[in-house]
Structures are given as structure tokens and as C-alpha cells.
Amino acid sequence: MKLLTFRQGGIEMVGMLASDEKHVIPVQEAGLGYKTMQELIENITEDEKKALSACTCEGIALDSVEKMAPIPQPRQDVICLGINYMAHAEEGARYHNEAFGGERPFPIYFSKRVNEAVADGGIIEAHRDIEERLDYESELVVVIGKDAKNVPHDEAYDYIFGYTIMNDVSARILQTRHKQWYFGKGLDGFTPMGPWIVTRDEFRDPPGLGVRSYVNGELRQNSTTDLLIFDIPYVIAELSRGMTLKAGTLIAMGTPAGVGMGFDPPRFLNPGDEVVCEIEGIGRLTNTIGE
Ligand code: MG
Image (cartoon, rainbow, N blue to C red; front, side):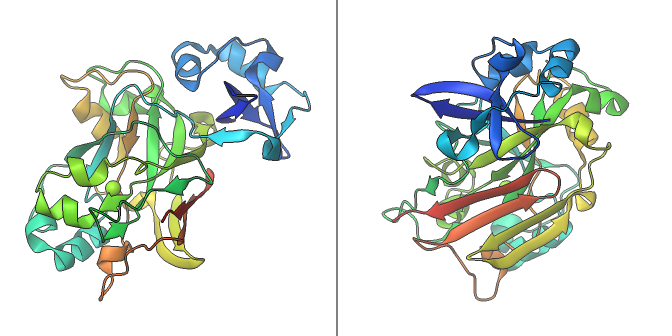
């Protein structure tokens, strides 16, 4: 089931993508009263999921609604993994060894501030007054479905509601200059997400999914989540020891090789560029760099 957030007549709503992928069925059509994705994730029951997926209503034409990110205003920062594919570790170290090189026996976790996640089709602010090295990172995002504390490794998938796509937009000058990544990763508009959440039942565990990105139609990243250094159960088990991962928590699993800083010379983004982040089984997240 693909679940999305959208606005119609100025009102935020949650719906299911119809099988033709051209219509969205508001959850109210299946008798569900949820007004936001966060509310739905926290409360939906298995019976309600069945009722929703069985709903055969025609729905609303997708091109007539205003698409939003699946969780437009996450309750907390997005938890991100840094350097979680080996080939990306190598390209990062070539670009800036002090910032990205070295041995790492444990994952890098960092936090991405999101005032408002950018929808599929939305604009990524370029922030040219403070940054000239704007980069893209196509990433699988895990959406936690129920509060998770001290989760055993082999039960981790039971806590997953679904998956979506994020472009972990990065300001490389700010990211490297300030050592901590918080500023360079958390500028306004730096978290495009979507186009929808695909529920976990549509994938096997673990989901071995192709992860790609394109800039102006040119393939830049092309890898698979099979190559994650620290996999999803490892991350949920480790983080949930001492840290409650609340329902609705978003965990971005890191990006593979092929980002702009990985090229020689680097190929950063410019105003007007179109970036597509694509993950097999989920879809395509398309955004344009603003002026
Ligand atoms: Mg990243």
C-alpha cells in the first residue's frame, strides 16, 4: 500500500494511491478518520489497513491535488546515517579526508533538522548567499511504526511501518567547515521526501532495493541497499538501546557512491538542475534547484 499526504482545498489529507497510480483515495473513503500521516501511523489497526486496501473508490485525480511530503513536519529531526556504503566512504575520503576518511567500526549518526519537508515536484532552495557546493544524496528512509525501545535484532522489522525516499541535500562547504554536519544538512528546503510511504508488507526483509539518482537525466548513483555497511536491524537494535524511537521516527540509511563531491572534478548542483532520487519498489522523487 502506498500512502501519501496531500492538500485539497487548503486542507491536509492522507490517502492511498489507487492501483492506476493516477488517483488518490482519501482514507476517509474507507471510514478512517485520520487527518495526518503521523496520526495514521500511530493508530492504524490491521483491520483498518485491510479495509483501506480493499477500498475500490475511484478517488481524486492525483494531478488535481497539491502533493506534500508524506510526513511534512516530522515531530523530531530525521536520524541519518553517514558513510554507510563502502564506495561512498572511498569517494568522500578522496574529496575531504579529514571530514570523511578514517576507520569506522561503528555507524555515524547525525541529525537533520526539518522545518518542512519538500514534496515531490518541489523546489530545493539553493542558499547561494552562504553555499556554493550543493550536493544530492539519494537515500532509503525507514519509517518507524510503533514506539521502539530495546528492540532485539531479530525483531527489528516488526517496528517498521514502511519506507520512503529522501534526498539528503548537503551543503559541502558548511558540512566540512563546521566539522559537525548539523548546519550543512539542515538548511530550509534540504529535505525533499516522498512521493509516498510504501508499507513494509510490500517488501521482503531485508528489502534489497536499487538506489539511484539522476541529475538532468544523467545517471549519477546506482547501487542497492544490499550494500549497506550497517543494516536496518543493526541500526534499530543499536539506537533503541537507551533511546526510544517514537512512532513516526524517520531513519535515513545513508547514500551510495556517485554524489557530486565524488567526481573529479566535483559536480555540484546549480540553479535549475533537476534531481531525481529513485528507489526500486517505492518510486521517484523529483525536485528542481531554485535560484
Ligand atoms: Mg546522507
